[in-house]
Image (cartoon, rainbow, N blue to C red; front, side, top):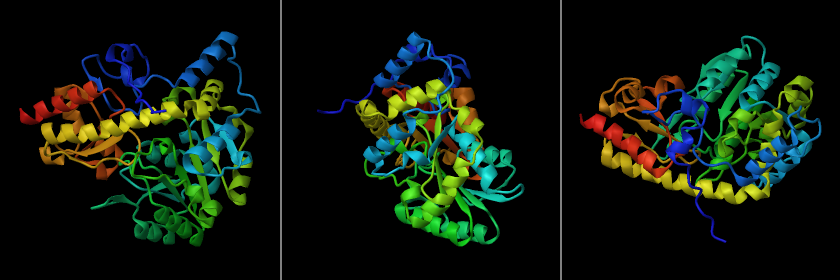
Length: 386
């Protein structure tokens, strides 16, 4: 059976939503900043939530749920990853999982490597855990963005105790290669460090790229690594609060088993129910349809920018629905999204918030209708020609 693209909801329906994307700015602004998608929920998710409401099933998340087993089956189908369900624990969201793990693998004042331009909360999560950020920026090559493994080795040799990896990478959409991940793991093992891999965008890898779960990259990766993930980005479930912490090696597994019960107790019950429905085989066709739409949109964006904003520089992302666009050639300063918001009424994510490497850049969310995407780029193009 042929997979059909999932059609985003129309703007009038979307503006009835009350989430951050649709309440931060006035109605004359096209919101394309925060990582929420404009798709209807997967039918299995809708059914699970409707049933819970009908039953009044709004209590605490149970100590025994099908979530770990369902995710393990999803990982096997989608990534070829053999995950032991016994080595999965849940918590409220990926950010909370990262902080709790960092607290247990670092001491106050330890340095944690991040790879900017990178998801802005990484800076705050390291600080919340009591550690200190050490920046090792990605390098841009003709083939795309890459981890600076030499720079990471220098930081580890200098005493950094952990690497907070974004895989796939937000905002560049980079899917790190198996060789890069294996080398990163070897470096972490050599210097006695830990890798925590945020893999929240993993279900959204586009044709031509293959996602490698960090814990599968090598035997060393299993020894030094933790993965934290969620259905929230692929299935638009961020408000329901459910994420997974996954290990493969025995030492990391002991750390996760040793987390206070309260860390898992924070899992949202509706998040668990929705996560089970999202990771079930019933939602595979929906996810495949979303990927068809996103693949089309990432290519449409390239065409629109070439026609409307030819001085923009944009690489097709290998994953997710976030475009990292260099507008430095327009002469709009370090933070062009400010002017675009003010004068074109399009809300994009502010590039410098991703680190100094984001100066002149914007992040654009293309998980929307083609008409919305075209309108946004045309508004920016009109501003560029004014």
